Length: 90
Image (cartoon, rainbow, N blue to C red; front, side):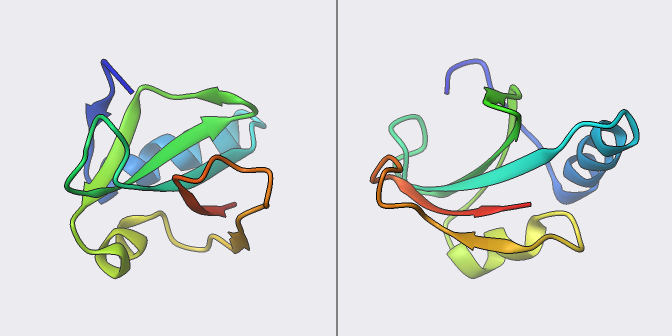
């Protein structure tokens, strides 16, 4: 996603918890080497269907998962999801 800012885990947690405090549900979607980051896995936060212009990225999927805010629950991808989507965390 163009114009998306790469963030670290502290900023990701701040974004997540601030949105929750405002009553928004934040969903983190992990993508398998998307076009804008072809050498990495990417986690993007969404509020509803609207993506935020921020992302976490790492070459190792396990490490990327560890960068997500604490306390999230993993959801398997839906067969209807884009093939680049690995999973979603809420």
